[in-house]
Image (tube, rainbow, N blue to C red; front, side, top):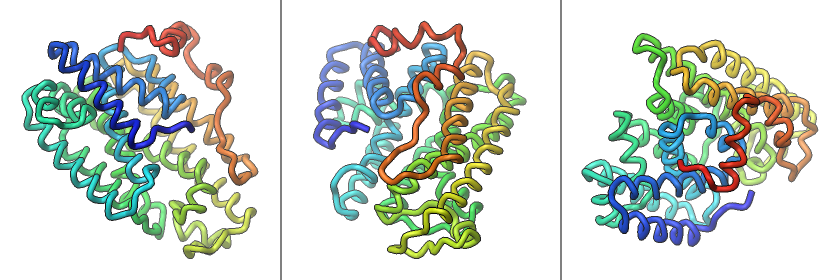
Length: 329
């Protein structure tokens, strides 16, 4: 994946800030949305595609949220910084988020010198009444990931890492997507939780070789032990044992995708195409991982023709507009 350096992020912030401050509040919001869309398009082809099937206003909010979760993740995983500096950057980011929440508008936040990403995330909170504690819990997970620990069991992994790194992001989206009726809200939150678990497990399995090479292993220790894998840092699991662990966790993820799909009707009708497309695309990736030979250095993905095969045909026209930059939000 061709990621941005920290310097490129800083430059993009400066360019977006300049454009936003030359516009009125509505125009400033559009500038931030376009920036979020460019981040999403660069970093996640699959999620970019499925979110194109959302109605424009909800799609715009997702663009803003994606940038707000991507940048802290880049601090932890990508920028060539020592752990203490990563921690300082995340602390400053958390403080800036609180300052952005206290601002009355995007313009006010930008005039205070706050990052455009956080001005956008604060706007999402204002528009959707999303509890700001969820973003704090996401940042807690990013701080914990600076020096990742091992997880004793699947329950430990879900409660103490996946919750903050993925489930709360799913909750962000529930507030954007909305539920079919007020009575369906909690069921939508449950579906978001199960989909977040499935997506995070699939991501762990896709990156297992790369993560292990960086001293990270997100797979549960008891499951590794059951397949004869020594999860001690610095030890390399055998290929066969690791493949067996991956297959078992892929089955867990597959069940979680199925639970999310069974509760799809809890969401507002205008979002179901996008959510179902997400389940289908990432479910396909999960199945490919379950049968993968885990070749080191090869990152499993779903070919574009296969992604198109699980998307709603009536919506294909959106994709050329998105890739050509003709989409308005």
